[in-house]
Length: 128
Image (cartoon, rainbow, N blue to C red; front, side, top):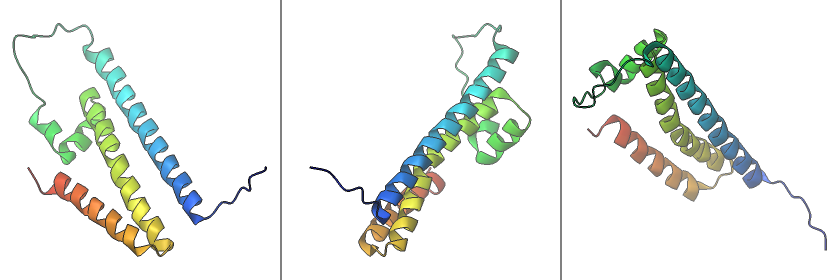
């Protein structure tokens, strides 16, 4: 028994979503790796003071600060940028899914995707 290879709009959307996730993770990992290499080259021989806790600097706690630090080619800023890209990847996937479902006129899944997207954005932008 042979199977027919039918590629409908649902299959095309699945392929695009998979490619988006794969590309997002690869790009984010590459950025984190680059930042890690830069950080190790500049600070790899420093002895850490484990008895003192130092959190991330204030500049690396905001998106503007991360962008400014990474534009100056500071390793920690580039690592943070890669992590922001990793966080943005599933958000972009949900947005692409909503768009794809809208093109297919599948309004129930558009509503579900839009609700999930709204919750993700609320969690990132509004809540503290």
